[in-house]
Image (tube, rainbow, N blue to C red):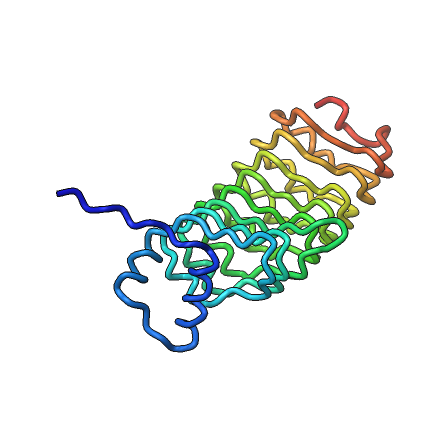
Amino acid sequence: MKQRKKTAWSSDRVLALLRQIDAGRRPSKEEAEVFASQERLDLCGKAVETLPESISLLKNLRSLNLSRTRINALPDSIGQLANLQKIDLSGTPMSLTPIKSLPITIKQLSRLQELSLRHTQIDSLPDTVGELENLMTLDLQGSHVCFLPTTIGNLSKLQILNLNGTNITALPKSIGTLTALRAMDLSGTKISSLPDAIGLLNKLESLFLGGTRLKTSNNNWATL
């Protein structure tokens, strides 16, 4: 007789139960089994300010959607979600997600492929972001980020880098080691020059520079 597959519970229900567990209640056998099989947690648009540390019980979580929430921090236990592939913290131009930083434990998410920090109050990335070896999309559009750590160059699988409307004024030389990069959006930034290393991005197909102070005569980007 085939074992019946556990039905995923609603994200609201899962979050409520995790909060109870953080408060000291032990999960039932059924709850533990459902937690272990939960692949998505979609809290988009909810009035969520924090996540419980017990989110680490969602061992099979693939997608975490916190877009248009009031989330102001991620718990350190986020690093225990070894199967997580997508995190969406995006806000809107009129209502930025209040989160201002990422925990250093983000480096443990070795399977993470998409990270959206679009329209958030994040102003910097931890150096450990360079350890996200499978990251393919990094979306920082409209965030408060003003610089990229040099470790960004370690993201060997990164294909899309969106810096549109950020406070970035320069790119690190290590940008030239992003050999898988296909699209980079620098529109609306204060960048006035590009490092020579950008000429090494031989897979780059799209480079958006609208509204920048870029002086093309001083750069080799036109050869891409």
